[in-house]
Image (cartoon, rainbow, N blue to C red; front, top):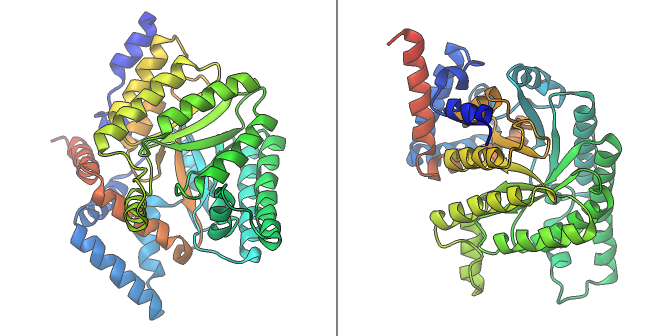
Length: 399
């Protein structure tokens, strides 16, 4: 490690709230403070979800309230164009944007085609903007979940009609990947439930073999709350080396833990989930070490709100004398969360991006309610956000 890198690491301080919130006005911080206080209460969140769903069912005019509060905190806007101001705002402080079309639950081919076109539009937007380093999509957003489930079951041969439907989903998938390659925009394919992940891994690897020969364009998402993913990652590294490609990875802890455990228990198969958070954290950090050690064959985006893992990656990069701005290494957090990690990393010259969800308020609501749930359930997350916001407000008052 050079003396310069050692100095940068010494200066990297995730408790530096002045850097963390330098893009936020006092009004922004006070609004966020109130919102996180609400989210801190599981009972309030539970009641809020019930009341929101009831109000929508009764067609009460609550979109304005949602848009001014939780939507404003966690989303960039209702359309790509609405997000332009947020993209520029983040970019001023060295933080990139990942436009995430967060509409869920569609089932018709017409809706799937509409979503495909929007995703391609985000790729074109990324090509035109220096502040958008990645595009992203969920395959279940462009095809029926049951088709992906069937395609992931290697023990069964689908009926001819079903095969045609699966082929149509794959064609949309390939069109999006082709657009990313043509525009030279990095593309994340999000991970999903274990019972549809096999086909996602397979299709994604096909596209990597096609497009990741010179640099990583296509990225698979690897969820380390699964106990089998560290071994999977190491195997994929060997395969990538043999194929002469760069394996792109967005590394996350995961988002479907309760659903996975419940399904495994209900259907009587071993849970694919780690026994506890400590095991997930251990494998996540070990995956970071493995990919940095084999960085010739990997490109990595560490999607994490965990300070220890984020700091570890900076230390591993320093040990290998990898520049902070090395294009193979990115950090990512969600908009509205963990600004102390994002902005302090960006301030130290690392590649950082925020996931910026967008879409019509009512259609993004399932995402927003899940975000509230996750903030409530992740140990210490909301308290950490509140503590940092409070510290910055006190600093600004001179207390």
